[in-house]
Amino acid sequence: FYYAKSARHAKTPLVPHHGTLIRVSADGQKSEIVCNGFRAANGVGVGPHGELAVSDQEGHWTPANRINLVKQGGFYGNMWSYHVDEEPTEYDPPVVWLPKNVDRSPAAQLWVPEDRWGALGGKMIHTSYGTGWLWHVMYEKVDGTVQGGVVRLPVQFQTGIMRGRFHPGSGHLYACGLVGWSSSQPVDGGLFRVRRTETPLNLPVALHVKQNGIELTFSDKLDLKTAADYDNWSVEQWNYKWSGNYGSPHFSVSNPRKRGQDEVDVEDVTLSDDGKTVFIEIDDLQPVMQMQIRYNIESAAGEELENSVWMTINAVP
View 1 (cartoon, one colour):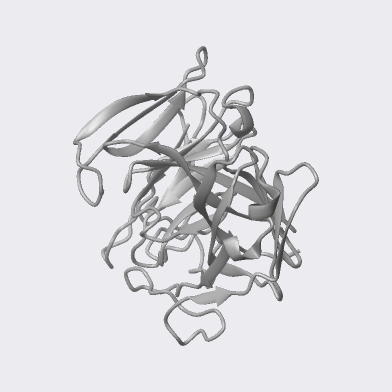
View 2 (view 1 turned 90 degrees about the horizontal axis):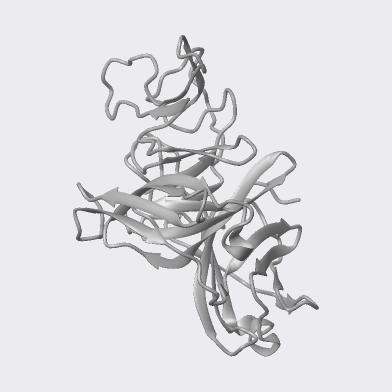
């Protein structure tokens, strides 16, 4: 049994287990710390291959909201969490950072069963307490480093969503939540069911960072003319500052002392022969904490597709 314990929110006396992920043995007789560095963890997701996901909230030593795929002995940024040895001087990066306008308060993650929900089968889903949206989390490993991005699914609830579970028989998703503070949604709480329809998803389902660009694979075929027109794509990027301050402004990548965001030139866009994978060519691609890729294109069936992918690049191949 795994659970995450949130940390102190000020320089108060430190209690063992503050800001840690804890594993309880199957017989319930003992517990141990798996990793630490959390500020306000909200739930633990367990993947089909034993993956462990923990989200965290912006605040002191957490410059923005983050989704983590954690590992034994990892440290995830909050210096006010419990440390067994000396205080660390660096942290393990998240799969993806989330700015406040994307999710002001992330909740728990879960995985779609392999044989359900079509192109989303086996994929990670992120629930949002802050906005009530569901998000698809795409991730990959580059040289042992995990990184990825999120895209919003077309499902929003009237309350802040905290937890979700897939029914083992029907395959429907059941989601529940509440509103106590800092959520944009108006309803105090609720239990909801989400069922798959045969309507095309028309969303990115895989993301890969290449040496000279970003590869996005969509669930359905795209229109060649609009998808391969680089004027229909735009990219911005910025970094955050890791400090004891509450959150962080956006900082330019090209000029780290300057606040703000950098526009990134899209050199070219190409569409694969199967009509589903877009390659966005970017010159001098570098690791960056936050990147937004906007697109306004059409599906092969003529449906207008306008959305954003919010991603983090921890390593460039």
